[in-house]
Image (cartoon, rainbow, N blue to C red; front, top):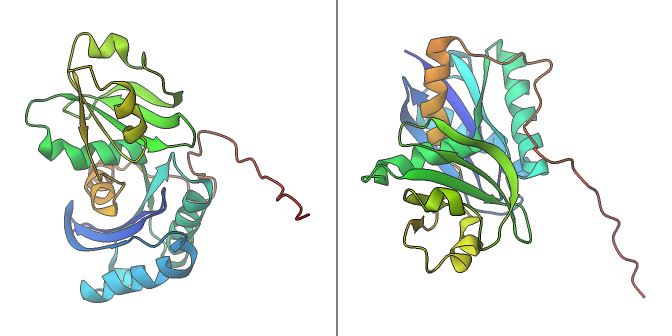
Length: 228
């Protein structure tokens, strides 16, 4: 057995899963915004109960490392690290965009390139580009979208775009036949669990003491405007 608890908190949604050898046993997803801090621990207890296991039975803890929401990632990683310390289990970190690509790949019947996008406000997204084998073609970056984004790639191949940042790109490239889109795709813990099993088999673990989320951009706090 290789029981892995996976945690995904990189966007407004939150999900947890328990997988055995990469196959999901129990999965829960919460669609309530800002629910991470209040409900994440309860969701973990719930999936463990439904899987009929104790948390001590787990072989590893996996977490979606980012990019994504600063607050969401901080909560997810802090929870994962706390469990690793308490249970003496290894930590596995999975790139959020790669997990999204893995989730969509089952629909990729024509072996198109995969470009997951997470909204980073205004016309900016966190994006990457993978082939159908999930090999990284273009690394994760913060990208400001315009009508010429991905021009070079779209001239030579079909690309499947998805994620909550892809909607605004779809409006810019409506006339480009090589650009394809899938709606309603968000990061999920079940995909994190599948990829985490590969890392588990390879012995690819993080240093729990020093691991930090992949924020990609520095957090900038804003001061609320004073009421007149």
